[in-house]
Image 1 (cartoon, one colour):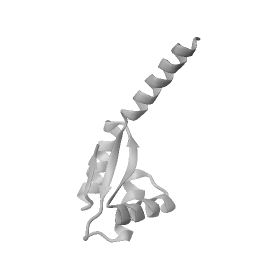
Image 2 (image 1 turned 60 degrees about the vertical axis):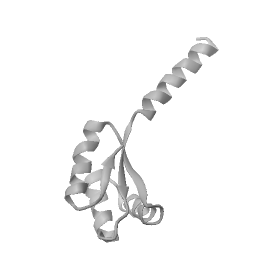
Image 3 (image 1 turned 45 degrees about the horizontal axis):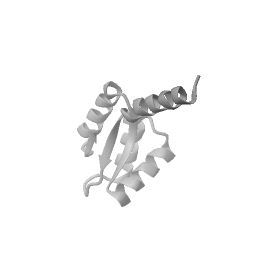
Image 4 (image 1 turned 180 degrees about the vertical axis):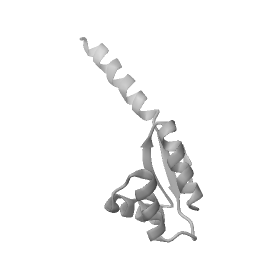
Length: 91
């Protein structure tokens, strides 16, 4: 494989990874830390530490990408967050 072919292959792989969608959760003045943590564990398969860290990022930065993946996988997860009163969207 030539250097040019390797560069093209790497570029194609990176592009495919970049096309992954993300669930973004936004900060609000309504939900408690415990509620957001609980919902990230239930909806996004986070462990307790990961959910707590994401919740702190949401609080201090205003938003956080909490899950990355295919749209079809993210849609029901995002819907569960929205139904729990958490401000979230897929980007």
